[in-house]
Image 1: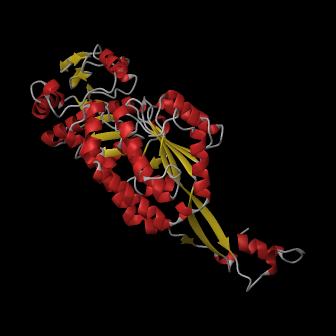
Image 2: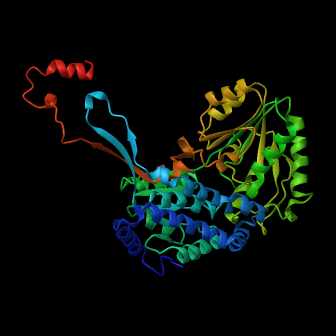
Image 3: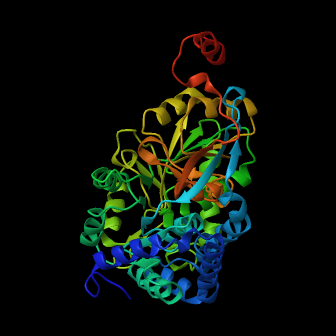
Length: 461
């Protein structure tokens, strides 16, 4: 296990730079081997991964497989496509530049820093790492100290499967992050909150280091009347309350057509009972809040509006029941920041323009959900709002599609990843123009007398 106390982090950075300069990571065969090693790391240690996630978040085994170990799919997708992604791509050259040819060559950036969050502490360091490996980089990973069991396991496993001069996990708290951010990297990939994202970007700017910021925000969920009510209820309830609501793209609040609201509320209550039983505190399928600090922050939100379901808390167990809030004002604290917990405010609207106005009054969210079979309404929401992603008639599942880039816009993030987008994020696309010695046309050389008419014809002036 490598920590800042046991090994100087500057020594690790220098070793990784030296390793990258040797050019080994540029070999596609090498990258493919490392991707297979990463998959092996996960498949051979599933039980240990599940135990650490349970220790940090009381995460159910099913959710651990679905949302953390499921990152194997991302590895398989990269293995399948790496040969095509890494090939130089020929691009067209206009006739007036004959006999030139042009290609675009993807090349690795060098040494990248991946800073992970605590809510999906394994998957959200592995997924960007897949992109970094596929693109041919060396990586330093800083997992979240708020998920210490997963952080320690990640450090142990990475050191067993990969040499430290290639991939290294550095554990530690805020001080570790600050020291790392003070150094120059070739790319920084950060997943977390908007406030810390600003700090990361400020630190990166001192070195002109490009960043990918996967942040969050208040993800709205619009519920129209033209729906399959049973499917809508289950999909909203699942998407909101997996991982006890600690998901950056969980529905943050519902905007429900007034005509359907009573039915929706009563059915969500019933669905919660079906999912987690009469007492979710005893359910093996409901996670816990990550820390006392986050528990206290969430508990204050329970004072907003009217609790119409749930509301029970247990600070000793960091438990907050799945909770529905009604009669919420946009000025309430629960509507001022991302909730990131098992609390779901429900706001009714009469006309869709009211819902759109609420969404557009807030910073652009990481995701937006719409439940409606009305194609005109679907198109209206697509055009009238801006969000990192949009999912129609479901929640959260957009992240499972490797061919869809995942990322935010505005306050919800910069850049994207997953699948080809991950490869693009950790690559530089180098433009290469090639001429031949077989022919040299004199139109561009001095003296220019008599050549201006030809130039005008070439450029269309």
